[in-house]
Image 1 (tube, rainbow, N blue to C red):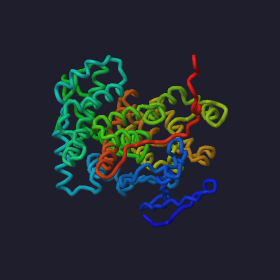
Image 2 (image 1 turned 45 degrees about the horizontal axis):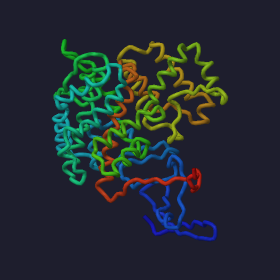
Image 3 (image 1 turned 180 degrees about the horizontal axis):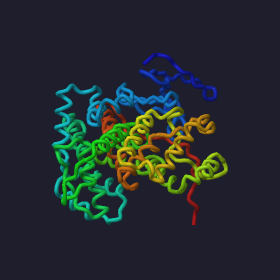
Image 4 (image 1 turned 45 degrees about the vertical axis):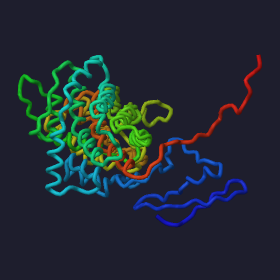
Length: 424
């Protein structure tokens, strides 16, 4: 923070505004005093507005940097596991060995859903989208813990965090099981977080399911790489909902609803739709030409990123993981995956894509991995939501732990001015 000032001239009026500096990143002009001067700022999408102060995640899109509590995302993905990253995002520091063990044990002891929740699933149609089910079930958790939702109590917030982290894989897997008509699989406390999710997704009561360690490792990396991404649309939604004092389950459900939008959480699903549209390797050159034609509506999905104007740092980890999974499952010759690998090569070498920095992003690789593992595309965004819950909760917790105000964006009104109702 500094005591520097910026001067804004509006007509014949001069307004001084404080300028703040964070740890890293652009300076921020404090415009809160403008309302007293009778003017607002206009920023559709809030792309030039800092709506909060946060110490959780930092992104430098120009340099391809993503830090969680200061730690680079690639280091966390290579050396940590998802639950340790959860602890880091929640508490600000990496856990000691004892703290890490206690945290893992605590999460394992919260994985069960209240048995009445089974009945809640029966209220949905079998062909309901899993995101619709997840949104409803997570919101319904507030009905089961209504006596432990005092947002001013740090202990209750901590217990709620543990519940959400632990129960989201169970909810996600049950959404899938319900859609295919298979029995719900209960969580197993002897498995890791990722192994347990795969067990609940693909296991049946008929025989023991043994998670493949390569696939479990890939799932854990997907969870880590989607855990948080600063003030994106769904995180901002959770903060805005939380600013009203709403309970945390309702706030997380609002984040799930925002993530469901195809412009946000549906990108990896769109990648597979694109690969299916291309259909065969022989069609790639035709579709590359369409992608380069600005008058053609076709777009290559999974390339480039709104934030990153350099290589998505998460994509480097996902690329290696994708090749490990394909090799483990012997799917190097899968038609769609061969198209994906060819597109990857073109994007990294073709001058058109390199010049425009349209590198493969995390959604490109995660979609390939999830398809290879056998997870249907309708579940992709559900897994994204399951991973992002820790980020949403950490931001919500950071907000309610400090001084905050109810969100109230302004508008540029362009409707009719005051007019009298016509006399009859």
